[in-house]
Length: 61
Image (cartoon, rainbow, N blue to C red; front, top):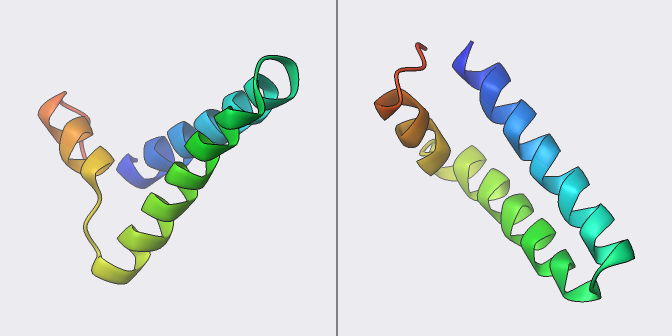
């Protein structure tokens, strides 16, 4: 359950930031890069900040 929520949030962030980059300001692509970097980092270190946040909010693993 938790992994599905994390993937859903990451995908939503990426799509929203791409739309913002197209329609508002190209600098929103930095947010897209930030999300991608965090996904890469969590796959290497097996630690995800979003996972910690969601656990504190009560989302069950």
